[in-house]
Amino acid sequence: MKTWQRRLWKSIAAVFAAVVITLATVIGVFRLLAPLVPGYRAEVERWAARALERPVSIAGMGARWDWYG
Image 1 (spheres, rainbow, N blue to C red):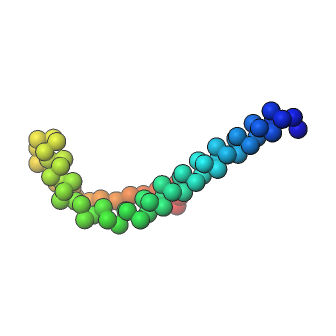
Image 2: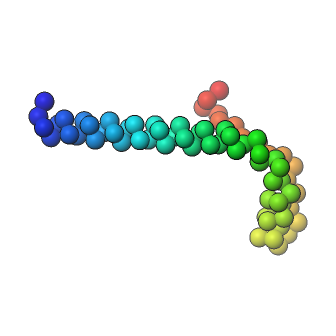
Image 3: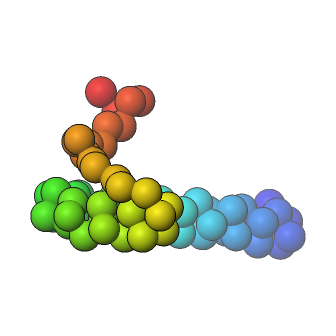
C-alpha cells in the first residue's frame, strides 16, 4: 500500500473511532440523566410559560428510540 493510501485509511479509521466514542458518551450521559427529567417538570412549565407568555401544562414526558427496539 502506498503511503498516502495508508495515511488516508488511518485518518478514516480515526474519524470513525472518534464518532463511535462520541456517540457512546452522549448515549451514556443521556441514560444517566433521563431519570432526572420528571423532577424538572414544574421548572420547565414555568420557563415555557414565561417564554410563551401563556399558561403551560405538561401532561407527560417520555423518550423513545424507535430504531433500537
